[in-house]
Length: 80
Image (cartoon, rainbow, N blue to C red; front, side, top):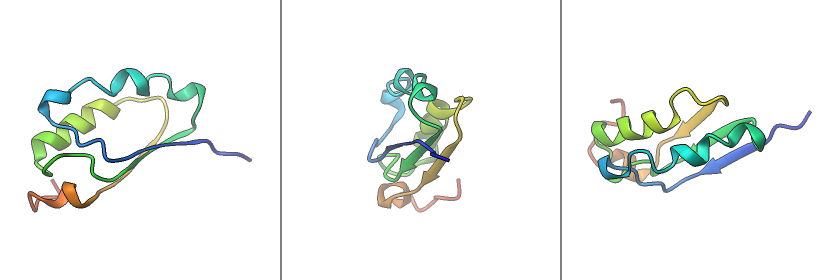
């Protein structure tokens, strides 16, 4: 069985980048079975930036797995 993984990292999202990636993610089912977010998802690791990332991947038709990077820890609140 083959599993197709789409991966993206270093997206450094913030409030001003809301909605930029969502159009690309909408086509994922055509080419991937899973989306991997591979670190540095935010600029400074703030909860507001993390919410932007969450909204970008909410309700996608493929599962999403995310790994935090060093930028995602800058605000020292990775659990949020």
